[in-house]
Image (tube, rainbow, N blue to C red; front, side, top):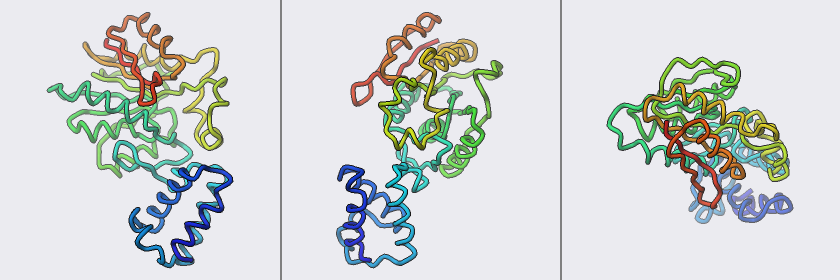
Length: 282
């Protein structure tokens, strides 16, 4: 099959499930990943013949997309903050709003002349920890996660991006002892309430790890409270705490931090105008 004919086939097979703009995005990512073609090649090499072996792979991508599996899991990788990350069903797919959190951290600390020590709690794929280590190479970055499988993926991503991050298996809810001190603590913990499940798309709900997504409706700030307590004990003087947060609980999260004695608590919106990040000084 020629490339132009495959594009027609690809669109036809998925047209009942996804909008055209999303199908086009899937197509370009699939072609780039599988056939090592660039966007311009799709238009300049329309008569390119696709081998039978490649057609088998491409058709399997279509079948998995029909089951609403995320394209990132199908291809096994995604881009975050300009870097490539391996992803699978053991880790959340990194989101653009989390890139904004990384930028905020970078803008806040990059002027500091001392060598900083940074802790990322609930690292998942390692996207936050690794991106910060890439952007601020003089920092010492440590990352925790409760999932050993997630840590395996994070370690592979550190190797892929050629950085040294200290990954540690740690359950912050049951293990209260952390010996080190840090200048910055960052976390994007589980924050989606069960009552908000109806807002989650099927490709997320049916594929991404619920352990990293959901919290009990009756205690939605569970992880934030615990991490705030860790910060009170383990942040150095003038240290900074950063969270990605539930957009519906911005005021509650801010008040919780103020009640615990944090200063200069700043609630920040993402590019879509949603309360998505918070910063506090110790």
